[in-house]
Image (cartoon, rainbow, N blue to C red):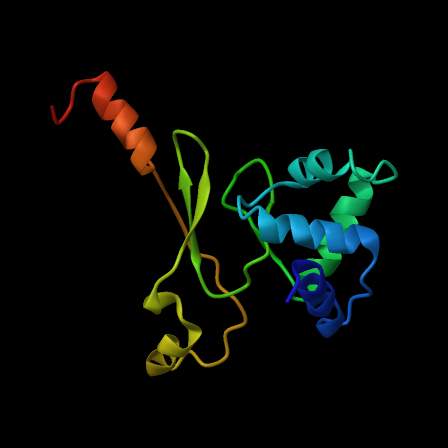
Length: 147
């Protein structure tokens, strides 16, 4: 199925009217899983949608989050980030380059929590911080570690 139809169907399934701005924001989040901020989304979409405002992007993200279409993450102390993947997963933020990645694990599966009798949870946010492989490699090369 074409991505635009998937986006439209996802919005309609959540009870969200698929306007041009909403579809573009969700499409951007789906195609760019870098956990962007409002500013990043606005800067990426505004050249193609000259009438787009930062307020529209913010309000769109708020609506999509309220309807369960996306999730917001607060791993970054300065900015709220957004993720089109609403499945159970954790996030890792590199202290070196600032990149945020998704981490998947069976432990994060909500069904796995049943054995602990936590049956009425609504959501969870799990964050890890450290250094990504590229930053570790750069550090090791700079300081001749592991050579």
